[in-house]
Image 1 (tube, rainbow, N blue to C red):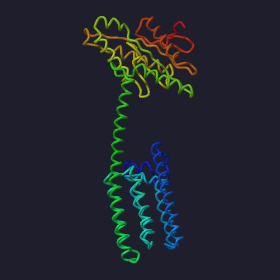
Image 2 (tube, rainbow, N blue to C red; image 1 turned 180 degrees about the vertical axis):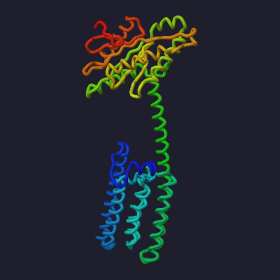
Image 3 (tube, rainbow, N blue to C red; image 1 turned 90 degrees about the vertical axis):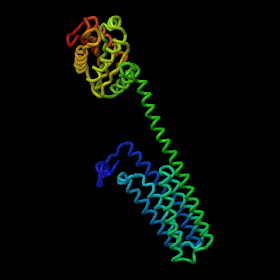
Image 4 (tube, rainbow, N blue to C red; image 1 turned 120 degrees about the vertical axis):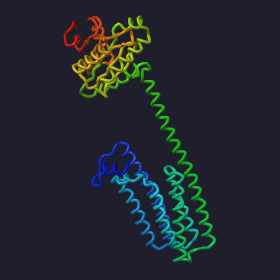
Length: 392
């Protein structure tokens, strides 16, 4: 999310509802911040123990506590107000890692014992470990150099203001060891981060491949529309939905008239071309929420959510007229085909197979009455041809 989008989505003066994915990410960031604050508390215990052992003055303990609370409070405020979403890295990984070193360095400045400073130096190496899950090798190197630079400033400060606290060879060994460990952390952390990046890419590719496979499973190879398997899944979904809430959906079962004669006369390739043309004609006139697929052979099924039988009848008539208007000039002159359509509306409490059976019965009636027409079948068993009542 860039800055302009963030400003539009997250005004500074109010907390607005977040998308579910963003809300989960923000919650996770708060959880990580809580983990970080726990490590501050553990380190504070060590600082308090140093004061108890008369290694540092009491005011340093208070300063460490205040500084740590301000740092964590600031990061929490940024996340709570969604201001962090305006940053390139909303998790603020690098700032949290670098700033977490400052309280420890402040305590180390007041320690006279080189070995005591070494203890806090080990603690200072913990924050970079949190970055292994989110930083690149280059970012890790920058953080490591920053850490080493801050430690260098501490050493120079001790040299300038408290030279008596320096222990010569011991401090030099600690500095070299710190540089070695930080460089190793940078290398290993960058390697792990690159592995995670490759894993994310492969998971993305795998997800796309699975989506393509799912499409292949759900699509009819000849016509490019949904197959029977997917149609039954959608019918089950719609029946479950309208079994719990008001509303209904309708089914339109189509059958191409005299299709066997077309295959026998013009061949199966011509029949395949007709199936594809019929599928394209129907699909282009449907809504986004509608579902259309090949039911089997020369039969097609349209699922119309949020549509009572009156609306389904209008849609079915339009589909019938559209198909009737198709001219297959490349097949024996100007061949034309027609379809018969049976329409039924799902009723709450009804098994979806019953709705399909009523649509199939209406389709049979349309064939029986001369084809190229639409017949509806309501829940009372009444059949109607384009609005005209037929024997129930």
